Image (cartoon, rainbow, N blue to C red; front, top):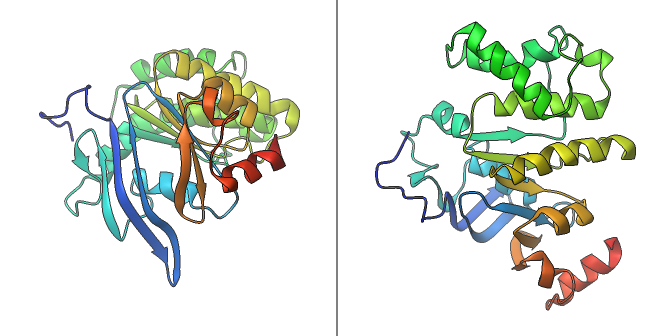
Length: 251
C-alpha cells in the first residue's frame, strides 16, 4: 500500500467532505480535516455526534457514502484497497479490549504479527516484550486477561495494536469503560506514544488529557465539525455557542 507520491510534508490522513448515513440517519454531514505526521488530534463532542463513526471510517471499518479519506495518499474508499494493508498502517484501539481470554498478554500481542504478517516468532516475541515494557506492564506477560484489571487489559490492547508497527493510531473512547484509578495508567501509555512521535487520533471525554496532549482539538456536534483549534485557544476562547455550552457542562 506504500505510495510513491506521498510526502511527509502532506497530511498523513486527509478527510474531505465525508458523508455517512446509517439508514435514514445522517451521522456525518460533510466532515473535513487533515492530520500531519506526528500530530496528536483529539475529537470531542456529545454522544451521537459522529466521532466514533468518523474514526472507524479512517481504517475502513465503516464505509463512507461520499467524500474522500486518504491515508498516506491512498483512497480508503477505493474498492481495490487492501484493507489488511490499511489496518497494518492504521492501528485502532476500542473501548472494549477484545482480547483473547485463553491467551496470555504476551500471546495476545504476538498473534497478529505471527499469524497475519507471518513474521518469525522469536523476533515478534522480542518486540512484544519491549512493547509490554513500553505500556508499563512488565511482569504481566504470562497473565491472562481475566487476571488483569481493565486498565491493564486496555494497555495490552494498545501494545497489541502497536505490534503491527502502524504509522497512525486511532483511539476510540479507550478509557470510557475503565475505573477512574485505571484511566490514568492508560492515558500515560498513550501520552508516551505521542511523545515518541506517533500520529494519534483520539476520541475522548478526558478534557484535561486532551488539553495536555493534543496539537489540535476538533469539536463535533450532530455530524459536523463545529469548531477546532489548538488547546491553548480552544478551551479558553471558544467562539461557537454549541462549543461553549458543551465545555461549560464538562469543565
